[in-house]
Amino acid sequence: MIITYINWNDMKKYIFMAIIAIATMFNVHAEKGNVSAGAQFVYASKHSMAGLGVQLQCEPLTNWRLAPEFIYFFKNNGRTALNANVNVHYVIPTSNSFALYPLVGFSYGHYTEDVKAGIISGSVSDDRCGANVGLGAQYLIKEHLHFFTEQRFQIMKDFNQSVTVLGLKYTF
Image 1 (tube, rainbow, N blue to C red):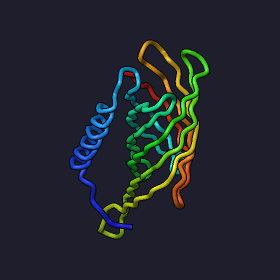
Image 2 (image 1 turned 135 degrees about the horizontal axis):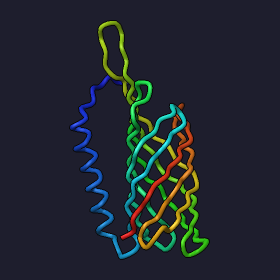
Image 3 (image 1 turned 180 degrees about the horizontal axis):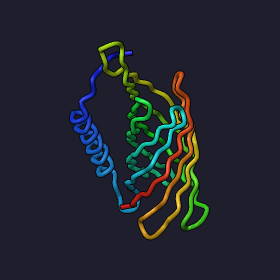
């Protein structure tokens, strides 16, 4: 573990740059109807952490979707987390307004915990890489607007957890 001090203003700059880079990548490959952007509420079971995230989706091939996302987990019991995932979905339409999709992907997590030893206080952070495996569903609310939910298992060394996602996305 490494003792670090996170400057939130610097972190916001990095997050913004990552979102711009991903959005640019999607814009290069975009055709009408195959790019979506969404906001999501996320709950992770390991430390009962809730968070907010953004997810972009691009469908480069019929029924195949690439979905990078970034999640910030709010502080709970002195712990915070940042999570970046890149998942692949295989979309199985069951009707004109509903679809299911299995998902598999790569996960990166940065976890920070406040520590205090005598008069010295700071934070300890840890980085982990892992995999996601799960199932998602989406429902067309109205033209271009979908509700989606995902349930996935995040596999990381000494940090396996269940992750529940609820969100809204807009298809361009």
